[in-house]
Image (tube, rainbow, N blue to C red; front, top):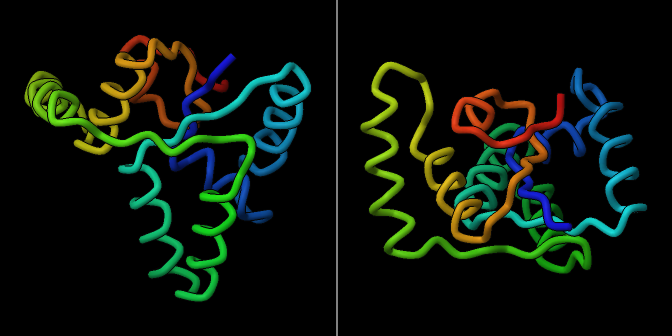
Length: 134
């Protein structure tokens, strides 16, 4: 089973002070024990590493980047031109929602890879029809 890993999941896993830390750790442990592997979009990788750089330090961001790139539990998925084009259409479609372009790109990666579940605490994925950690 493959699960999409969103920025909110990454943040929860990396910050013991995050309100979702314990839930995230338990979910990760449970899914890994079932043989799950994770997919992270390059868009999510950039968003997460940028956040760590700005909020913590460049040193910590490089450490996190290396951990992700060398992980045996996840694969970094590129964003294709077709993903980008359809993500923009979704972004416009959700004009009455606060769903951002990064999430729309994630939706496209999930659809292209036929992923049904996102490791996220962001309801935007649920709005688009994916199963989420709840």
